Length: 124
Image (cartoon, rainbow, N blue to C red; front, side, top):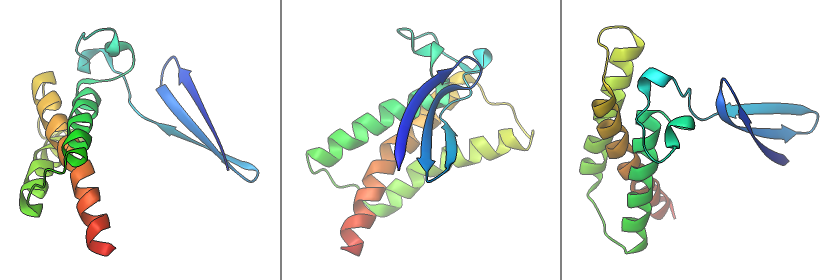
């Protein structure tokens, strides 16, 4: 298995995974200009929701590292707003704004590493 990273002008950051003779591309962010927040040059790489996911994920990893445990129900509740916002927007029922995208992405990103850690410790 071989990994490769690239930056496509239209798709943004892409990770390519080559398994045998097939190459798969994973896009990380659509980088639409109307969905980005100007923040230290990150608008060239991440939309508002992805930026929130990144910052929330970093905080979640730090909380996990210092062994702060959050109840499972709270982790699930932190993830639900992004899922609702994303699906409402996907089905054109409501158009979100960048602030909501940033906040819901942050809460999901915060909960995700803690939830993964919880599930791994529960399984093992």
